[in-house]
Length: 124
Image (tube, rainbow, N blue to C red; front, side, top):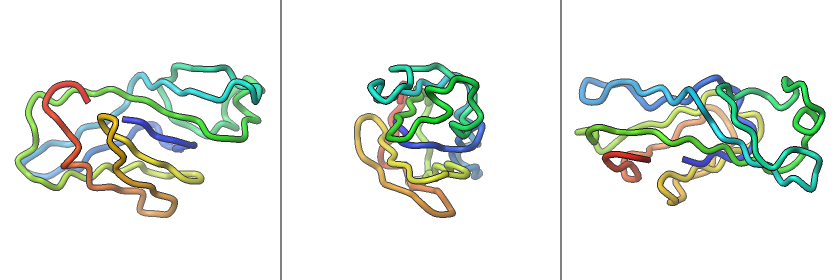
């Protein structure tokens, strides 16, 4: 999954329903920056937070597009065709890709997308 720009929440969740339990996508994330703008090329983080919360000036004052990446495993596919990805609070705009397929763009609450058609069993 790829998230672009600043998602300001510690985790991203897929919906909870009786057929498919809640899946929190917390843990290790990779953030990639255009390094010519002063930020490091790539950073690993366990929290998604505002760039202004980072200690290094290269990220704290970064202006531009950043790409968040997260790999997650699904042991079984959900029985429901509709699976909601809730991004929580998005500061500006986020484009979501799952398994290299564009899912959609969100910029206002609620920052949710139906990702059911893009999921596959195993690595995503």
